[in-house]
Amino acid sequence: MRVLLIEDDHVLGAAVRDHVLSIGHSVDWYQRLDEARLSLQTITYELVLLDLNLPDGRGMDLLHSLRASDNPVPVIIITAQDQITIRIEGLESGADDYLVKPFDLAELGARLNAVARRYAGQPNPQITMGNVIVDLGRKIVSVSGKSCSLTSREWAVLDRLLRHRGAIVSKTDIEDALYAFGSEIESNAVEVYVSRLRKKLGRNSITTARGLGYRIDAQ
Amino acid sequence: MRVLLIEDDHVLGAAVRDHVLSIGHSVDWYQRLDEARLSLQTITYELVLLDLNLPDGRGMDLLHSLRASDNPVPVIIITAQDQITIRIEGLESGADDYLVKPFDLAELGARLNAVARRYAGQPNPQITMGNVIVDLGRKIVSVSGKSCSLTSREWAVLDRLLRHRGAIVSKTDIEDALYAFGSEIESNAVEVYVSRLRKKLGRNSITTARGLGYRIDAQ
DNA sequence: ATATTCTGTTCAGGTTGATGTAAGGTTGGG
DNA sequence: CCCAACCTTACATCAACCTGAACAGAATAT
Image (cartoon, each protein chain N blue to C red):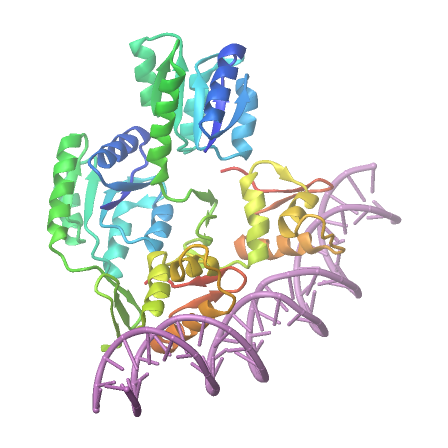
C-alpha cells in the first residue's frame, strides 16, 4: 500500500515512516502542505496520514480540497488536540479515522491495516478524464459511454501517463515503459502511439509539452 | 453478498459502505454514474444501492437502462425527497425498495438483509451472452436453446473469463486456472481451448485482445 | 479383458493485425 | 521567416494467434 505522510515534526514523522515501512507499506513523507499537494496531483495514494497543524497551512484545507475534487483516498487525521469540534469537522469533511497525539505506533498500525482491509475489497480505481473513463486494472476504456479497445503498447503509454497524471512525462520515460530497458529504439514510436491514443480517446486527452514530453491533466 | 453503492455524498457514502461491510458484505462504492455503469458491465452484483441525485446524471436513468437490458439485480433507491411521484416512478421502473434520507443505518441493514434473504432462495445466477446462457454454478450451457456439454478444461477457461467478463483476462491468468500453480506448460493449450469454446459457443463469444489476452463482453 | 469413446496435449501450417519505420505535413518558438 | 519539434498517415514485417489433425492416456462401454 502506498502511503502519503504529511507531518512536520521530524521525530514523530521519522518514527511513523519507519513503522509504516516496517509493516510492509511504502511511504512518501512531506513536511509541507504544498509539497504534499504537488505529489497528490501525480501519484495515486491508497492512504493519507495528515497532521492538522502544519507550518504552511491547515491540514483540514487539504482534506477539503481532496473531497471537493472527488478524491476518495482514505485519510487518517493526526491531531494534538482532542477537541470534539475538530473531530466533527474532520469527519464531516470526509476523514476516515483519527489519531490523537501522543499515540502508540501499534495503534497506528492497527488502524492503517483496518483501512487496508477495507480497501482490499474495493474495485479497481477508475480514472475519469472528461468523457473518458479508464480502468487500468481491467484494461477497459470507455469514451462517452462506448467501450473502446487499446492495444498492448497503447496501454503501456496510457498507463505511464495516467500513473503520473498532472505531471509531464518525458519521451524517454515513455520509451522505458514501452521497451525493455536497454533495447534502444530509433524512431518516433512514442509520437505515433500518442497520436493513436489521441485518435481513440479524443484530441484533447493528451497535451504536448514541447521539448519536455506529454501530460494528462489531473481531473 | 456483493453490493454496488452509488452515492456522491462522501460522508453518507462512507457511512453506508462501512456499515454494509460490517454486516459481512463486500461493497464497491462509486461517486459517479458512468463509473458505476462501467463496473456493472464486468461484475455481477447482488444488490445496487442507488442515490437518485448524482453529479453526472439521474440515477433513475441507470435503473431504466438496467431493466431495459433485462438485468434483474435488486435495486434499493436512496432519495432525499419523499415525493410520491418519485416513488411511483421508481417502483414502475423496477426498484425493489426505498430509503429516504436521512435514514437509520440499522434500517438500511434490515432492508438489505431482506433482499439477501429473498435472493438466497433464488436459483443460480445465469449469465446470458447473446444466444448463449451459462449457469456457472450448475455447469450448464445452452446455445440457442439447445444444451451443450463442455469438458472440465473448457469450463475452467469459460469460468475464468465469465467471472471477469468485460475485462481482459491474460493468458497466464487462464493458465493459472487450468494448471496448478507452478506447473508450467509449454504449448498453446489456452489457444486451443479458446478455439474449442468458440466452436461450441459461437465464433463471437470470445474476443481476442492481441498481446493482452481474451475477453467476453458483458451483455 | 478388450474395444470404444472421450479428453487433454502437442504440433504444424495458415492467417492476421499490432508494430516499427519512414515520409511528408503541421505547428510554434525565436 | 526559419528551423526544430511534433503530428499523421501509410505500409511491410513478423510475432501472435487460429485451427485442424494426430496421438496417448483415461474413462466408459461391451
